[in-house]
Image 1 (cartoon, rainbow, N blue to C red):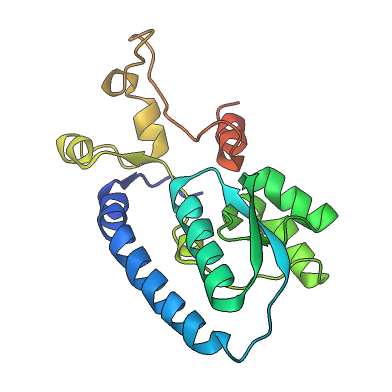
Image 2 (spheres, helix red, strand yellow; image 1 turned 135 degrees about the vertical axis):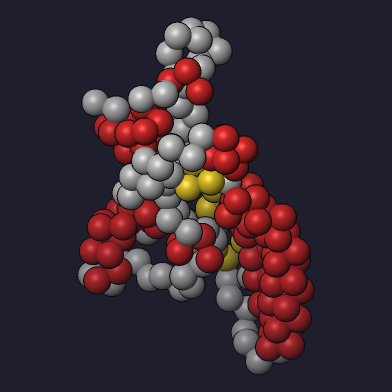
Length: 189
C-alpha cells in the first residue's frame, strides 16, 4: 500500500456518477439479455451472493433481474461478505456467483483458485482497478498540505480527534468483517 494519502475527490466523483453508470449498464445489459435470450435454453437455478455493501447489493439485484427475465434462470440471493463468500466459493463451490467481489482482499488465493480452475473471473469489474488506501477530506488536505503520507497524519492526531478521547486521534476504517479491517489492524501493530 502506498503511503501517499489520497483525498475524497475520486470517491466523490465515483459516488456522483455510479448510479448513472449503473442505470445505463443495467438498461444496456437488460436489452442485450432480452435480445439474446431467445437463443438460449433456460439456465436452471443458481445461487448468487448479495454482498454486504451498497454497490454489490445493486449488482446482485440487477444481475438477478437479467438472469431471470432474460435467460429464464431461477436465482436465489444469499447473504455474503468478501472473506466468507470467497472461502465458501473456493472450498465448497457455493454460492455459484458473486456479482461483485473485492478482489484486493483475496488477491493471492483468488489467483491460485483461478489458476487451478476452481473459480473463474467473469468480469474485471470497475471496482477492481480502484485500489485501496487511506483517505482524508479535500478541505483537510487543502488546509494542511504538509499531510502527504500516513506517517504525517500519525504525527497530527489533533487534526482527527477521537470522539470518546479527544487527546487521541481517530481512525475510521472498514466495516466489521471486511478484509481491510484485518489489514488495517495489522498495520497498527
